[in-house]
Length: 111
Length: 111
Image 1 (tube, chains in turn brown, purple):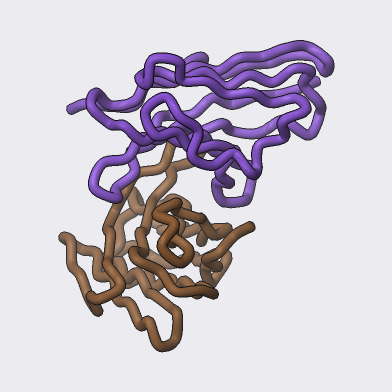
Image 2: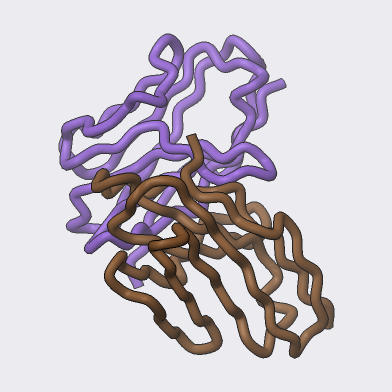
């Protein structure tokens, strides 16, 4: 079963614009993680945010977590064509520490 | 930089044949995961190992799938017999401090 659900399913923007993806989940979590996957490749870990954190930054990435709404967002600022990929959130359900993935958001950044 | 190794990268087989995938996690990582990812969806956990022991294989179709990690290092996932619906990407990951590191995956096509 998939715990997290990303929204939108697909996003198409121009280079330089910001991209925002959302993730909603159902049960309490310890951690929420965001991953990137280029077409036909393995997943690359982007950011881990713990349940007691509200915001984290890494370069052009900003992740927020709202545990009251059971949701997270990933913001990519000043997007580049190389950011074209699928982005997944993964949550661990109720203390299991087993990451469960959503269906992902497919991001296309046009040069 | 240490990486998770997987082989083969691509495998084409006919239904009813046996296939095997190999994974070598990052040295020192005790936790190893096998995921299956169908095109357009997120990865779904098949089995989790802690050292040589299976922690969770509740989603592993045990009538045809088997996984082992005999010495607590590398791991093998086997499918026998393969079915058309097994066509997917098979991903291996190892974990350190709640961060998963994924291998490049094995793309299986069953004809």
